[in-house]
Length: 138
Image (tube, rainbow, N blue to C red; front, side):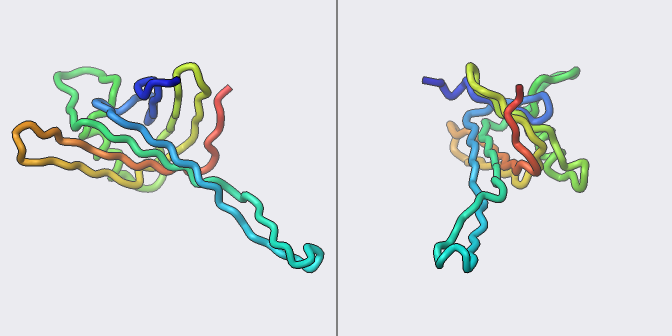
């Protein structure tokens, strides 16, 4: 059994500060074909995969000065607003004791949720889409 804290999504070489959840979704995109040779039987073939990731975190800010090992709210918003080639980020999805997968992604969504309640947490969500290949590292 793998505990949830053993799974990590990295953007560049950093994880998101205060992460509480990482989700990986892989969906096959198929093409349907039928030819006269198929005698009326449709064929399906996988032409690519849509790979998306979603991270949830407690909203956090790096404090002090220096080089930080995790991305905070401001880092993520800054990256989310980039366009063109600057919007692309290296993405790593790893599981302790399991395989690691890498690819190039873009942030397709960012949201924050807050409440006026005294004991509530402010959270953020980041959506990533892999563009191109998502491959197992060797």
